[in-house]
Image (cartoon, one colour):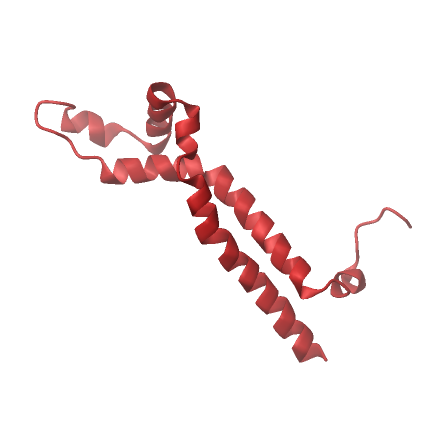
Amino acid sequence: KTGDSPNEKDKDLLPPWVSGFCGFAAASAATVATHPLDLAKTRLQTLRTVPGSIPRSEVSSQNVFAMARSVARNEGVKRLFAGCGARVAAVAPGSAISFFAYETIKEWMQS
């Protein structure tokens, strides 16, 4: 039937660079999707209280979602994505290389 999803034989016809590109795209999408929560987590981990400012009990009761809301409210939603490009540049190439290497070695071992 036409329009069906590719079967295993069709997948094996794809060159390894296609898997590398797919790995890059998937890692990029996942990194962008999770970056706001990662930013909030990092802010919580590095948060320091100055004596006389925020009570320690309030700081320790904050969770990742509350921190993300706080950043969005006080600094703007765009700020949740600060540093996202650098994070994609650090993560995505490794995924691309891993997928490419896996498919290349698999192809080499099957021949």
